[in-house]
Length: 535
Ligand code: SIN
View (cartoon, rainbow, N blue to C red):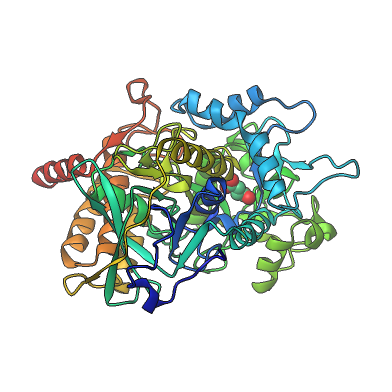
């Protein structure tokens, strides 16, 4: 059977899915596609808001996938670096499982046709990134890992008859058959513009919808990364873990673009240095590892330089120089678009939201707190990253846990037939959130729940978020607002600083807070009531 992208008319035919199984994966990025491929030949439906591989952060990843495959490196060293970066709250069992399966998953990707860089003897070439004690990042053509990985997986998916694609469908709500049991989902066709919503029943739903970057004004994530998946799961009652931990990449290219293009950390791994307008190499005074300090430390230092008007620049003219175009073609292209020649000029940089450590709580097999619901990739919080993700562990987490979900579903869920698609009209529910509301939300999150946080600012953010949520009747905006609420309330409750969460009113880590956060939406709503009462 050739892969089918059903046309609108076919969708409402009761026979449309008669020969398919009822596993639905929401998301066409790395986690979703890898999960679908690993489930083959079992039939699955992949529902994606955009053509698969587009609108996904994975395709924009530059550095690569962390795996202890170079000479002298070990899985134990990779684990130790992951625990250290995570600032005391990594789930060690989960992280051990992740780093232990890295080499096998790299092998899978090679089999799907990913052209990882190799030396003349055929050994994988690895780069260095901050907070890694070894060269460990398996890469493609320097900085083209995400694009190459997604290119290979998209063609593998198109050649896998058991995968049915529903592209241009935006998932808006989970369908529940009881308080605990997920029984399908409601999606909006036509890239979310249709006035009619459809209902897809399923016994297994896998959410792989990515992160939250577009909740903020400056982000390296695509505009689709608005926290929709986590919000949708929370609204259905799923437990969300560690939402307060948002990672800022220190070096987005500061040329006023939305999303902001990234200058990979591998550049600093090559010896590129950070300077302010006065030419001062400010990281030297801040951390003994200078530019290779953990990401949160470098991000805060750059934020401080930029907001105090001193500016921040990445200088690659000596460390990379004339090799720039060959070794980092993606960043070179971004710089050229902005009229910068990075082999001869410094690159203006700014911290940008890059990754969410928090998300839907999952176990080692990607199961969530709701029956019938699994999740993988950035939308989850497996516990592998703690308070601060080690660079290039994100693609690794996506492939390891999506593969485990595939095994879990294949092993435990008997094959069955999918119910026909139902149709729901949605006059009560508008399609897109209004651009003004979205703009206000992004400005609020950046100003009050960003690189540097205070109780006063976060309380202000909560009152604005509540006001915005009362104004809208869009399911999609409700998902987005829910995620914003979860991040903000968890950040306000955590009265300390740790990893990606930094508060000037509680600037140090506190021993009693050396634990993960687990919250439901009901608990967050209750906390908001209390916060509003005392305000
Ligand atoms: C980068 O290339 O700097 C990003 C890598 C990552 O976030 O894991």
